[in-house]
Image (tube, rainbow, N blue to C red; front, top):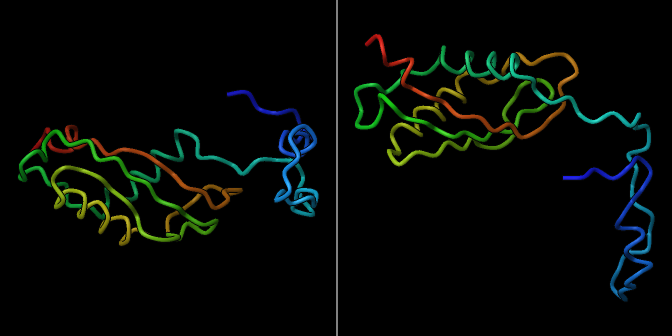
Length: 135
């Protein structure tokens, strides 16, 4: 996906091309003291660290049906201090497996986050195959 160049606001220009009587004519908020830097996203190493913190609090469900080779997608929002903002959302066809991941995430919060991290939604997946291989 193309990113607009800094300072170019396509929504502001679209209003001139297709004026709407309901369109808000105020200029877009800029955030005041923004420096133009995007929030720092988690790199691969930081994401692996986050997942490792959760594994420390999770009893991997190797003995449950589908537990040995489960892939569990997870979505969480963490604030700048590593605290959960809202519930963690894990999805798996075996609800007990998803519930276990969600409990581990709650037990891990607050997470140790890299410096400069800003609140954002993080999406990742747990794969139990490696964890269950030696059991």
